[in-house]
Image (cartoon, rainbow, N blue to C red; front, side, top):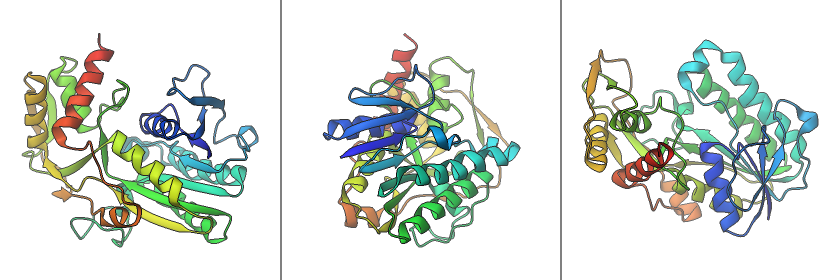
Length: 303
């Protein structure tokens, strides 16, 4: 298939483009900068989702839409920027690409504060941040567009993504694993955590997420619209993550405890639907493997 990947130079987009090229697909990567680094086998295509006249028209057999603003805290400071990028950008893309297959990279933030654990796709959506609300609105644009028959669409809701491919570290050090590794590397004096470190989250290797995008793109058909959680289903507390980082790196990770904040004690994914429908399962998402890959990338980047 001829495939367009938006956000192709980003952390997840790079991994998805890499997997698509390895699977034999003809891949274009939408980027805003001429110096963007893309995987082998992915051609750069310049464009901006907020400039609809400059978007590539294809034709494309498939699109993996991964370009987005993603930082939750920043979304509270400038919610309109997030809605413009994540919702209007998605609408502009859908208008440009015509009839095709679309895999949309969404987030578990659409669930807000779930009432069930592990979280199934049938859980109600009630996002608590502008980021989550913007991603849900973009999901709805994709899904309603699919119901017209114009596209086939799969929405993949991701929980916490970590790890590395091709020695590329996660650039977002607001996330727990990159933060803890930065402390182990001496880039920060300590890791600040809220509360006693017992909050449980799950982690998915970025390469496993990329494999899920490829599987979804290859199986969806015109007129279909599906939603799947993508995750490992294996929870780990903040304490366990910190201990694993110290063990894998062989370095201490000093911790400074801040007052506890209102947050769910557990957020874990129920990925049974994607297992059954697409036959996808994570292969690299053991916590220590994720940390080891991320550490190797970070130390390579730092020389």
